[in-house]
Image (cartoon, rainbow, N blue to C red; front, side, top):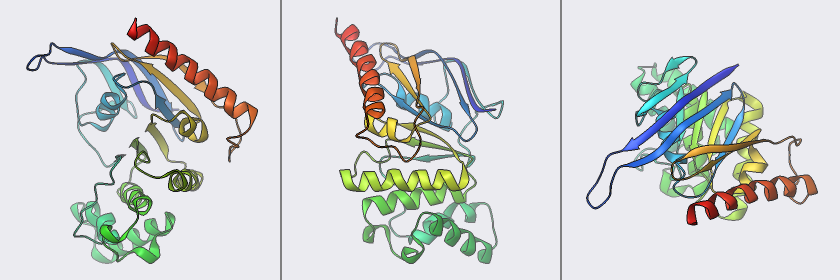
Amino acid sequence: MSIVDVRQLSKRYPARAGHGPVLALDGVELSVEEGEIVCIVGPSGCGKTSLLNILAGFEDATSGAALFKGAPIQGPSPDRGVVFQEAALFPWLSARRNVEFGLVEKRMPKAERHSTSLEYLRLVGLEAAADRLPAALSGGMRQRVALARSLANGATVLLLDEPFAALDAQTKAQMHGELLRIWETMRTTMVLITHSIDEAVALADRVVVMAPNPGRIVTQFRIDLDRPRDDTSHPFNEYKREIRQVINDCTRSVAS
């Protein structure tokens, strides 16, 4: 059953100084099933982030529709949690109080807030770091707090905009494992934007490839591999090769 539906969606940005209008997305069609992990890849300028911003409710489409559980998306909602490349934590609040922030806005009683925040910090393996400020946490730990915050606020869909791009290779691999462990526990639907084909094949049930000028979906790959995935295996690398070939073809067609 689809939880997110995008129907003939287009996004046009108005002219700016020295630049004409930009058609960032044109006729995008996409459905995301409940509990699915979908990764969106493509060259720079293909509209990946514009699409995610529309799904988050940060921007409106110019035409077409973006639906969540069958209803039009009209602004941000805690049902659709967003995790950015930078964790965007409040630096003056502890990890626990960052997780609690949205619960305060919901007027949840203090004792329930406390137990809920610790429950989700435990889920991401950070209960022992609950009272640390963000400055005392590593980049990977900060991203785990951001995940805990979205989940504690009741997100049934996680929208992730290159959340691991700033991490070193070892920490990134650890975060992939953490994200999949959370998914196996909660079956939260995830839509993840990434420039990394390796990351997409490692995580996704389905990889969506976009092309630029204007941004559109050109093909999708169902990743039929058991988890955890061996990134040295022939099937894994064959998916990578096929996806890279599509992206390279898109890039060449734009350049010509």
